Length: 303
Image (cartoon, rainbow, N blue to C red; front, side):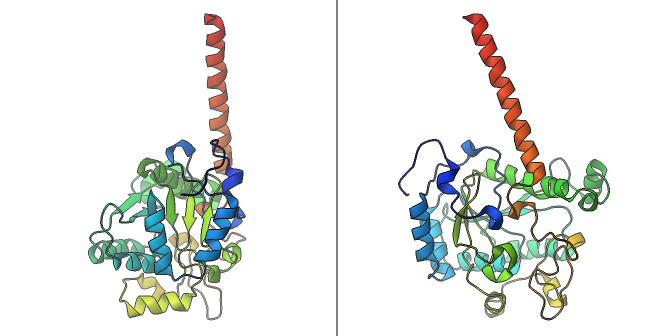
């Protein structure tokens, strides 16, 4: 790949873009990721080149350049376009890009029905489904975490429903890079999105349709007969969990229906580490320090 910096995995070398627009990897262990490094100048150079390419060309570059590449998707329109473009490239295995779908257990029935239609339309694509740890149904989730956790503690909800499952997926699947469905035209923190980014944990994030508008995405879906979420025909544009998604009015921003009436504009996996995630990380570091201290103590006794 690119020239390496120090062998310490210094994230100051890799985190060249403000993580406010980032896609948190959720990876609790950097050692689980393949060692792919970009220096700041190299990453800036790549973004200057990639921003002028069509999405298909960006995807070809990803396939030939990035090992451990997956697509993370909630089956929104942009992700569906990416999936369809990849399917038309006739990529041989093992270079095919598998999907990671985080089933929060609170998706709309229409979203879950779409997953089945996607599997039927693209039978060669593997869809890895990750749910909140230790639960399989909404009722089990409520029993474990309490009723309406998204209202009582939205940071904790984001962690258990999205960030922790993402951690698990990246660790178990050995994910080094992901394709996302984010676009600049979605506004908010995504307005200054680069095509390729590296998050705080070293995960490479590629936004192949960063330059496209919603209309371009919608036109592609229609022209190529890509299956899509039926809720889009009922006034929805950006679709997440049923409890935090509403239809939008004419003239409203694409993501105006998400967390309506709240300051929140991104879920846990699209922000820098949530406060809950930071707390978990601090606890892990504390445990590691205690284990190291005990080991050193035993070593002193032996000597």
